[in-house]
Length: 167
Image 1 (cartoon, one colour):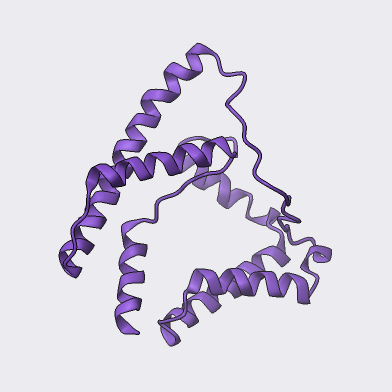
Image 2: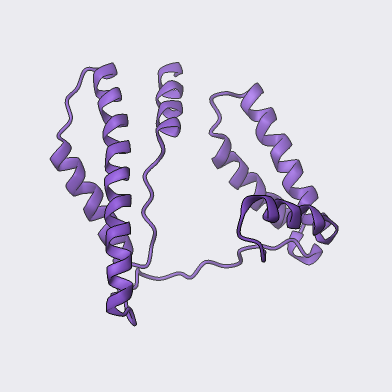
């Protein structure tokens, strides 16, 4: 996309609709229909996981790669590769660190709000310091192994809690 603002980007998207790849679009729409159908008819089924399994199964069964549907391809195997950030200038560090600190605070606040609501609902206590250290260590170890650590959003945690209560 060449546009950076919302309305120009929307206009550019509409103008480029003729360039969509039909097999990929059809496959995506079929998966969306399956998602909504599963959500309505089988509320205990983890829909995102089912979607991944169905997508992989369909890609293998129907050889979707030969139709031009973009596939991720094989994932590299082996052990984790530890690496430190390289080729970052001082200016990069001074730009990244304050932003990363802001993201860390927001992530921690979100995680604590979720933890506290579940603790109150289920009658247990939490230790915010321990959770903050665990969250930090998870992010640091993920970064050093070239991964991306992500905290589940509150809505997903609430859905998992609701599903567990239904069992």
